[in-house]
Amino acid sequence: MPLVTLTQGHLKLLELCPRRLQYSYLDQLAAPEDPDRLERQRWGTRFHLVMQQRELGLPVETLLAQNPDLATAIHALEEQSPEWFGPQGDSTETESLRQSEHRRSLAWGAYELTVVYDLLSLTPHSGQVIDWKTYRQRPKKAQLSQDWQTRLYLYVLAETTDLDPAQLSMTYWFVPPPSEDKPKAADRPGSVTIPYSPHKHRTTARDLRRLTHYLDELLAAQEFPKIDAAQGHCQRCPFALRCQRADAPPDPGLAPIPAIDTIDEIPV
Image 1 (cartoon, helix red, strand yellow):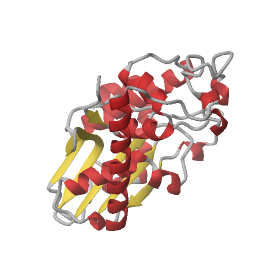
Image 2 (spheres, rainbow, N blue to C red; image 1 turned 135 degrees about the horizontal axis):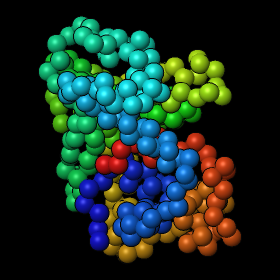
Image 3 (cartoon, helix red, strand yellow; image 1 turned 30 degrees about the vertical axis):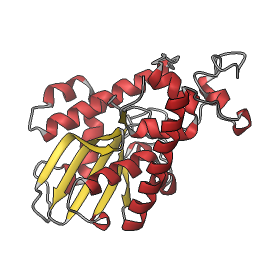
Image 4 (spheres, rainbow, N blue to C red; image 1 turned 180 degrees about the vertical axis):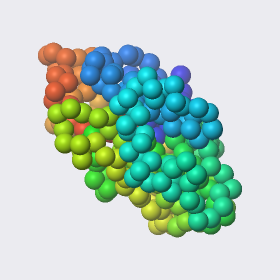
């Protein structure tokens, strides 16, 4: 069944491995889950829920009382950036829109590009996307800049507002769960901001045309090829056995830092 909606996750897998895209989205095959990762995802889901309820003005005291670690993380975030997350906020410009879990779509040929912003803030002269990450490893800024989450989120925002790309940015906030075996400083929230530009916008449009044209060909041929095993991705892929690229299930301990669009997030 052809894809209609394209998210950053689809684009990421299309570039990484078309066969894995087929297994994950077209065939909807379940991949083995790492229990430790599932627990991290549950913590991340609770964090997202609290932040969403805060933005809606709903009480969160009961949720925080039930999870002291979560309360610690939220309070640390408020201290780190009171202008964004304090009780009153201190914006220097009136926001025309501030919304949690904000969904936007953009028609793109036979597809619909869809994004969901953890938090979106728009003013007459700026647009800022906030995204929560609740794992410890923080990718470098260059990696975040090239990730399809950053690129698609800012591209769709530029195309669906009157703002110039240079007026847009995306900030990743890393809020890890507290850990007893790490220094307290390692539990402090941190952020990375990626500015946008007209050049980045043109480059993303070019790459979207390339990838969607490639996807058109794959869907027409009903054939999604495997990648070259020499690239080294297969041994860490949950579908390695199905592709006959592994003799045993991959060891979760060998897994690299996951892509920022695939871990500890609320599914779209």
